[in-house]
Amino acid sequence: MTGEKNLSEFDAVVVGAGFSGLYMLLKLREAGLKTRLYEAGDGIGGTWFWNRYPGARCDVPSLQYSYAFDEELQQEWKWPERYSAQGDILKYIQHVADRFDLMKDVQLSTRVKKATYDDVNKKWLIDTDNQKVKARFCVMATGCLSSANSPSFPGLHAFEGTTYHTGNWPHSKVDFSGKIVGVIGTGSSAIQSIPEIASEAKQLYVFQRTPNFSVPAENKIVDSTLEEKIKANYPEYRKEWASKPFAYDLKVNEGKAISASKEELLVEYERRWKDGGLMFLGAFSDLLLDKTANDTAAEFIRGKIKEIVSDPNVASMLMPDHYVGCKRLCADSGYYETFNRDNVTLVDISDNSIDTFDEKGINLSSGEHISLDDVVFATGFDAMTGALDKIDIIGKNQISLRKKWKEGPKSYLGLGISGFPNLFHIAGPGSPSVLTNMLVSIQQHVEWITDCITWMREKGFSKIEASKEAENSWVAHVNEVADLTVYPLCNSWYLGANIPGKTRQFMPYVGGFPPYVKKCNDVASKGYEGFKVS
Ligand SMILES: Cc1cc2nc3c(=O)[nH]c(=O)nc-3n(C[C@H](O)[C@H](O)[C@H](O)COP(=O)(O)OP(=O)(O)OC[C@H]3O[C@@H](n4cnc5c(N)ncnc54)[C@H](O)[C@@H]3O)c2cc1C
Image 1 (cartoon, rainbow, N blue to C red):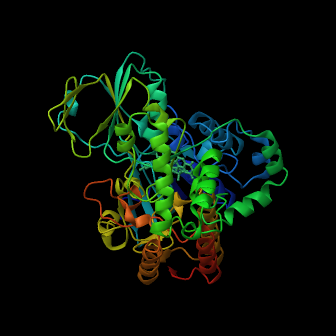
Image 2 (image 1 turned 30 degrees about the vertical axis):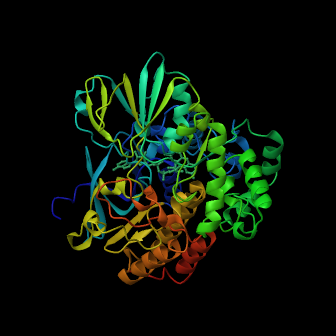
Image 3 (image 1 turned 90 degrees about the horizontal axis):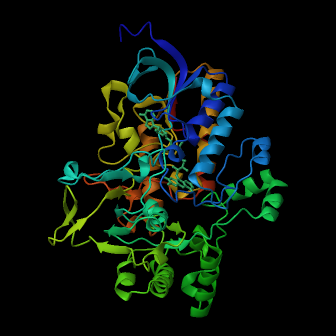
């Protein structure tokens, strides 16, 4: 590695300025590390910087989907809505950055292209699109849902209208009034945006390959009594929520759907439907574990779709036939109702697929042509591995991460990767990540990584690497617990099934947040068991 001597050097480089990267920067700085954060976008916020589509909001209550690490911060911040909108979450992130003076170590509009481990000096060489630096530690806070999936359709380049991707939305208001708009996809972003776009557009075509389950969000202004109650004892509430399997207050009913009577099922599902949000998944303790139990929830939601949507054909097209929750359950504001509007047409592309685009719109395989002014791709993300896959990460002995993960991602605790010393990633595959309130997972990861680096420095170590054995046994455990649930039974992005050619492997850890934390703490208390340190 000659010629690298004169590079600027940091103790740590963090990649990505979302919730993960910003908190990582703060903690490393507090631990005394000279840290630089690189962010590809021209602003901070990650998910909440990029996803500005109409209707974008969180589906974990804002009083929980927020940082817990600073009592003053959580006391002073006022969330306007139960599930805050993208703009309000972005304001919060900007407030945090100002409050903790983070921007001085953040370099925006800088994409990390390559990271190469120099085993002789035990440092990472980081290549961005405009400079090269070195650092002892590299933390990939690149996001699980940050690499937009944009399928390529023949003829798309010829389309004369405007195209948008929900995951990379313009910064100024897009005006759909008077337009004929096509939305491709019916996942979470589509389900949030369709009611909003429909209320503005002249005509909306929704192109659906697979229907998804959605429950009403019942979003509203934050209940001030609840806010006061929580703020009076915030740390205790945070502790209690973090002790739940999904790291938020899902209120899982202890009863089982398989042993409940028809009336009991109906009462509980109705109650959860009325209360709104993902709490629906907690209606019975066996919903995600038992197919028969899950069928009762699926049947209930299908019944609701039938009740809400006036045209029986459209209702039946909207009814999913997979297990509830095995694809991310969506929370909506008037999604199914939108299909009763005269200006909305549902186009089933499961058999009659999109063949080509032309100047004026979309040609279906049946030969039908649909004229469109604008097209919105709500086609999601190359989840969990996509952002890392875009970086040329070269570990020890010239191993490339892309190559290592070709047959599916492997990591130890979702934090470290064998062959890639001193590289950490946040909320990646093998971590509870997207199955939890991610703010809680993110904070736990960041604090664990900071403790690990601090411990290494105290002990005089300069290199840490997950062992192959520990990694293999963690991956086996991740798969084993996933196989006890209904999660692997759908073609979901959790499995990589939305990306052609991606190896199918259930990526997040479904064993529950508290056991995961216990495992991480045990590993740390045993001198970072499963890692090789030197
Ligand atoms: C629409 C939407 C709604 C969501 N709602 C919820 C919710 O209600 N609850 C929940 O728990 N989670 C939710 N999530 C998941 C959400 O992604 C996380 O909660 C959280 O915001 C992730 O933060 P992060 O910092 O890990 O990643 P991100 O916010 O994705 O940030 C990663 C950053 O890394 C940058 N980056 C990536 N690669 C590079 C590179 N090579 N060089 C430089 N920069 C790079 C990206 O530009 C991005 O800014 C939602 C996700 C989406 C898309």
